[in-house]
Image: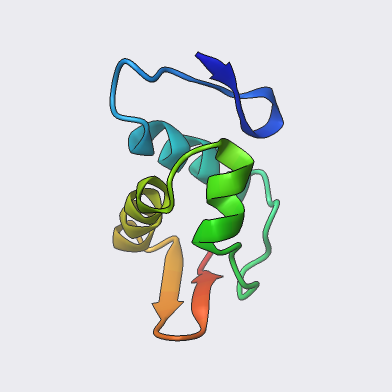
Length: 81
């Protein structure tokens, strides 16, 4: 395990993307990003969590499927609620 975003520890013995999704969910629930605000890009989040962009992309897809994010092709993702 290694220290990640905000001191979060990722368990690398199991898939990491659900852990990233859970932390992003927590941060959304805490109001870190306001509804309508542009969500950080995969490059930024990958660097923050110390994971690959594809790992972050899977987490973002999960959040989009839950209705928490809206993605606009070529413009990024935005917080829904």
